[in-house]
Length: 88
Image 1 (tube, rainbow, N blue to C red):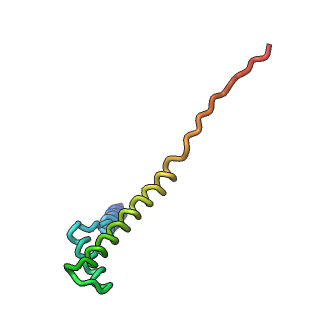
Image 2: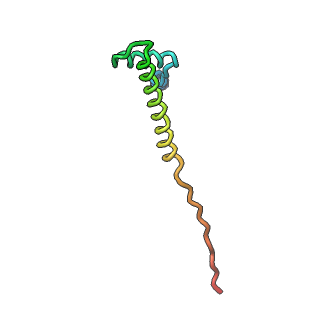
Image 3: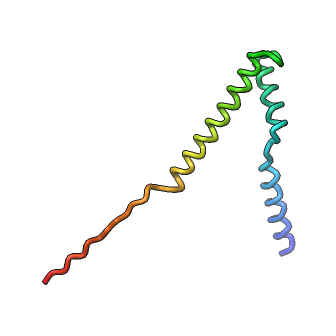
């Protein structure tokens, strides 16, 4: 029983460790490295445009993800009004 709890706790810790997010500074550094890998030099207008394009792509992907999830989570609401007819 004790071993089972330890294994479950270790699995949960592993799942939480996999959910790390990047800080804005780490994301900026990664984006700069990506643009530098494309051949853009730091401090140039082309580098700024590359960084802007990466950020715009990231935001568009986030909006798309939210839209897809919203359409799956909240299906269209159907309101039905039943009419009961009594025969005499």
